[in-house]
Image 1 (cartoon, rainbow, N blue to C red):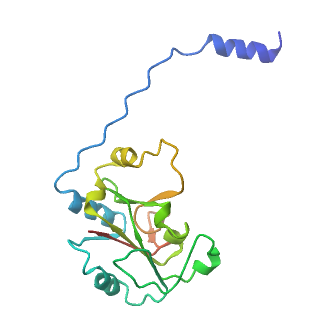
Image 2: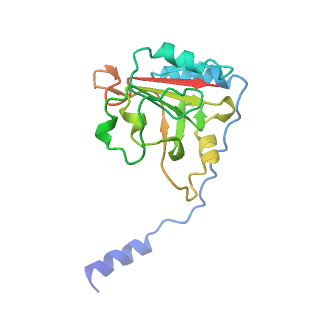
Image 3: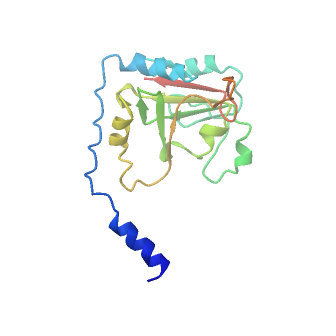
Length: 195
């Protein structure tokens, strides 16, 4: 018997007993204070969030927040102020001067302030990472309590086509001395508007 066979035989003889897989936790309930808790969580990770009861004042709110933005890309009807056109084939180098990107999120997670951006909301996958400022619109009825709820809604265990990303706050990094830098490698600011 070869040494390889002896090793494999020893491994087979010493397998642990099979155990049933644990039950996965169930998504938590969405509480009445979900919107203020989501807003607080977005702010705790370095972003800014506001609850706008209607979409009629969104354009003025975004213009007021980013008065110096010149190169703007918006994919939402509530803010029709795009000054640049981008698609999946746009070279990344052409994206480097975009000041403001406004996108629609399809899910918000209360426990960590993350917003899911699906592939169909992104004209180019690099946009949430290369813009100077990022604004995400999210409907209040798209909030879930926790990541268990997010995975249940997104059904990521199935064969889902395309790309998606959870965005939580602006770009940030910290060193060993606990000095936090916001806007280090990506957007300097994130504004989430819950409608």
